[in-house]
Amino acid sequence: MIYHGNRFTIKPGVTTEQLDEALESLRNQGRSIPAVKSFVVGRDFGGEYEWGAIFELEDLDGYWEYLTHPSHMNTDRVGLPLVDKFMSFDISDDDDPELGAKITALHQRRYDSDAELTKLVSDLGEYTGSAPPGPHGD
Image 1 (cartoon, helix red, strand yellow):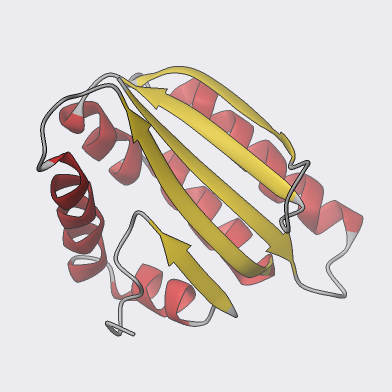
Image 2 (image 1 turned 180 degrees about the vertical axis):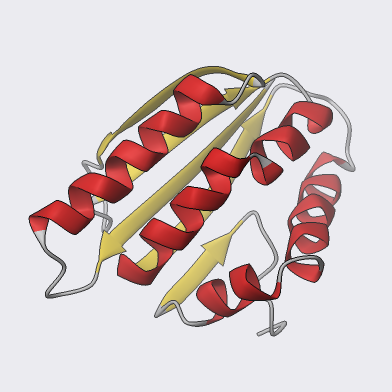
């Protein structure tokens, strides 16, 4: 299993309506993407981030389905413009020593095929985690 997580802080000036739409879009990912086995979206406690989401995925094929599903793409377009600081992470019980590199390659493949997404991620104030350090290779 792979548990893919996101932690994020919202930019100042974002309205409650904008935030609610982005959070609902994240929840919709969990409900609508067949590869998602379970999920949680909510407040992030005990750290420097305000919000978070975790999606349980069975394998790399499911991870790719998750990344490229239209509901995930909607969240990118609705949510990323609102985000100041973003972190992604993955936790897995898979013993494959190359799993991290394979996950990174999936994210990079997605960036390489979607210029709009690449721009949205590049415009974040801060981006760290399991995906490449940023589409610019920063």
